[in-house]
Length: 285
Length: 261
Image (cartoon, rainbow over the protein chains, first blue to last red):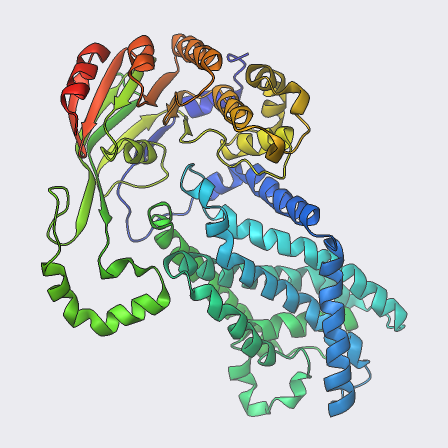
């Protein structure tokens, strides 16, 4: 049965691997990442399976978390403070932003520990380390999908009719994914070097929450500050998602471009930084 | 080019040890930044062994060169801390060398520990799939090997039981069985024969010899002289990061015993 080698094996038999000291700028092998696609999917499946095995509420939590937050915000912000959200009911206004926001927060918090949680693999076997933060983002996507189903139910419940803008939803989900992955790469690499870095993240996320138009409409932000405000890429993600889902409040192109540019910078920088730090992961853990 | 599957040239690996640098936290890093003027003073009174240079760098491997031909079974020996595991980690690309370089022809499967990547909550079958994916194997291939793997490891009846219910012996047997059935061209095994079960140990030895006859190159670390003598066609001896002997297993073992620490 050993001789049952397929074409893939024969191709690899002539492959020469060069092992050299690290350079400052490590190349990225996209083809190799693709070859490890099975591993990426299995790691996502593994973590989901283990999570739903170990916790009683499992999948329910992915639904409850944004719903509870929606309830709290609706009472405190929507009712007590009387912030106006136009003709969109406040709960649906805030929930449509909480869905991408929760995805973002969960991926960032989990990214901190992705290398350490898989230290058994990292110190004993070669595979592209980029797979680990990618798997973390992938798990977040599954939760995002569940939360989106609830969102569509709510939209139906409130009698909101979807418009053509819903076709843009995949685009903004992609933007959310790249934003989360970009920052996740930085955190994953930093947390190996500085184990206490993860402790700053929850606080950072709280501040970030208020710097993003989730609980309040962007119209509350003074016009002059909107450019600076859009440097936070989650502004683009949240505004875009809300527009795509509810068909109201088209975001300004300028702000969207600023957010998109930041996402690309953070992602490209994150990949370079991660690859640079990655060569020491096995030695440092 | 000569016929080799692994060629190492002047491979060295340096680690930073101890000292103020090792704090591994942001707090520690900031503290160090403030204290850095004192650092030089603190360093002066540390005691260095011969492997540690003045800057506090530890050389786990020093200028190691060798070539291994296809189908060889090479034993790697050395006392604790000689650099065996580091060398295997470099050859399996878990870590990179500090200096020097190596060339590897063909696909390496390294088993630096039996059952790497096993998750206790997953079943034996699921873990086999996961282990295969870690070794860059497609699902179809692993499914074809499933019967052979379970037969070799003898865990048939527990295939759909979570690994956390396995005995440690079963887990190790499954780990070895997977490593043997990934059709490696080069198989690297660390601490191979700490297997308690001697019947299984004998089966592993037979399997390794069979694989070598089929052209697989095998590099094994072992503390136990017996399997080295029985299987290997050649053995290398590492001492304090230096490759000090490379020859027939008998001669290397004699050298190994004369270098008691």
